[in-house]
Length: 86
Image (cartoon, rainbow, N blue to C red; front, side):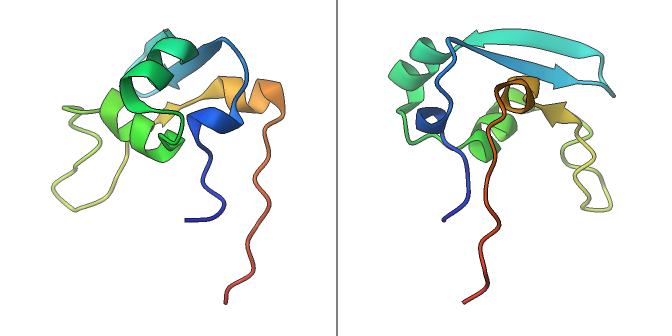
């Protein structure tokens, strides 16, 4: 799917993960993630893996209320251009 960031798109050595609702923070080694999942691993999929088992990810009403974010993307100025509908 165009417009979804992958590990290949982020060049920093460390990927920061933050979830304000749960109070969790962490740092992941980008090279280790690429070795484990491949450079084409999308951040949206990485987010799901990091939040696996989180009660807020799969609420009874079907809403995803998980607050897992990657602050390193904002800090690095990684921007995704909006795609025009086809």
